[in-house]
Every structure is written in structure tokens, then in C-alpha cells.
Amino acid sequence: MHSSMLDLFLELQKMDKKLYRIKQEQEKLPRLLSKQYTSVQQAKEKLEKKKEEIKRLQLSQREKEGNLGTIQSNIDKKQGQLNTIKTNKEYSALTDEIKNQKELISTTEEEILDIMNQIEASVSEEATFKEEVAALEKEFNKEKKEIEADLESLIKEQKTLDSKRQGKAKDAKEAHPRMYYGYERLIPAMGGQALYHVEDEACTACHMQLMAKDLSQVYAQKIIDCEGCGAMIYSTHSLISN
Ligand SMILES: [Zn+2]
Image (cartoon, rainbow, N blue to C red; front, side, top):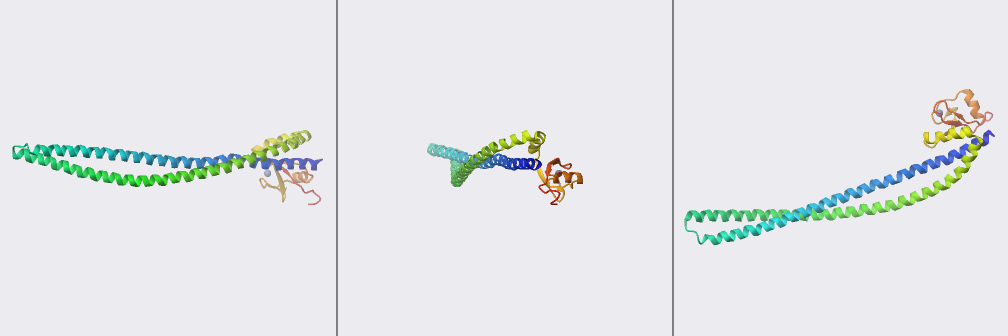
């Protein structure tokens, strides 16, 4: 009777270990994907910022080009006024103004050239960022498909195992209710494993040496609680064979 009880709980334990591993995998997989999703979003933000920068630069270029036209027509107007000037003083004041405006044109032209260079560099960076986004999205989609397939097969495996476990759990509950409820409490508390075997007269969960009275119990194929860690401990050896 004891041997069949041990077998029953060992079978249950085997399934629960697997179920626990499946559950952990199920929790881990979407986390992997969320990391990759964040990378895609970050790359997209970088690209958007670059696009805005290009727009700002283009706007600034257009503004400066507009300024050039205004300054030029100013100069034209002042040059026309030169013919109507009567005094030397007025003449030199006006030529000074024209000179200043012409200097303004050349600095503005330099600024425009500078902006055009910045635009060229930014456009090339934008192209690189676009490629980065595309590569990361491709990677993300590939990973997503793989993870979804993995999850699907895990769920299938879990369902099969769950229904198998139901039968075993029913048997264990009916035959050994006290031990069964203890076992059920321990499984989540001890990370999917409640049963530990005894090796070299010690509990393999906490390595505490067993007292003689406990040893004789486990060698009689009984499942007992470890006094060190609370695990359910057992031995598949008998007292005679040891
Ligand atoms: Zn222990």
C-alpha cells in the first residue's frame, strides 16, 4: 500500500514539475517580446525626431531664402535712391547702408549653405534610422511568430498534462486526502516541487541529516515531512537493501 502511495505521489510530482516549468515558460515568453517591442518603439522615436529636425531645418532654409529676397530688393531700392542724393553726407550714409545689406546677404547665404549641409547629413541619418526600424520590426515580427508558436505548443502540452493530472489527483485525494492536501499546499510554495528524495541519509532539498527514527520511516516507503525545510521526503530504497 505504501509503495503504491509513493508511486502515486511521485507520478503527480513528475507532472507538477513539468506543469511548473510550462507555466514559467509561458510567463517568460511575452517578456522577451516586450523587450523587442521597446527597441522598435525607441528606434521609431529616434526616426521621428530626425524627421522633425529635417522639417525644422527646411523651414529655416526657406525663411532665410525669403530674407535674401527682401534684403536684395532693399538694396535695389537704395541703389535707385543714390541718383537722387544731393549731399556727400547723405550719399556716404546710403552707400554704407548698401554695404551693410550686402554683407547681410553674404552671411545669410553662408547660413543657408550651412543649413543645406545639415539637411544633407540629417537626410542620410534618417535613411540609416529607417533601415534600423525596418530591421528591428522584421526581427520583432519573426520573434513574435516564434513565441506565439511556442506558446501555442506549451498550452497544448499543458492541457494534455492537466487532464492526465486530474485523474492522478483524484486517486491521491481519495486514497490519501491528508497527504494530498499537504502536497497541494507545498507545490506552489516550493516552486513546483514538494517531494524530495533522501540521499546519504539527508534531505536533498535542505541537506539536513535525518534522525534514525525518520530514516526508518522513509526506508519503510513512507512519505514524511522534513524537519529542516518542510518538504515531503521519501526513499525508494528499503531498509534491507541499505
Ligand atoms: Zn529538507
